[in-house]
Amino acid sequence: MSQQLAHTEIKKTNNGALLLGTGLVVASMILVPALAGRLGLGASLTGALRIALMKASSRAVSASNDVSKTA
Image 1 (tube, rainbow, N blue to C red):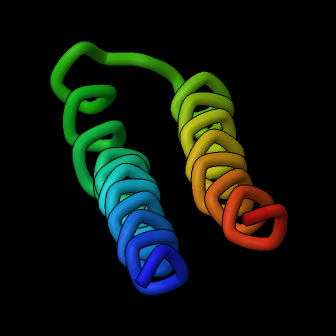
Image 2: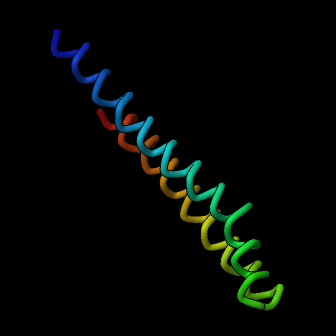
Image 3: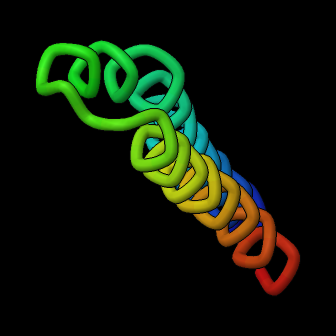
């Protein structure tokens, strides 16, 4: 019974991390270029913001994998 509860908690954590990662990807692919164009930011700054958000997305998803391996 306790094993089933542990697996349920891991799935919830993974779903939350995947949702966060997906949100950051959407922000980096769609919202950042749109806002940068609207504000008149340069291409290099826009690229740097996109890279930072993609790295954050990768960390959010990989952190959830580390948690599930330890449990």
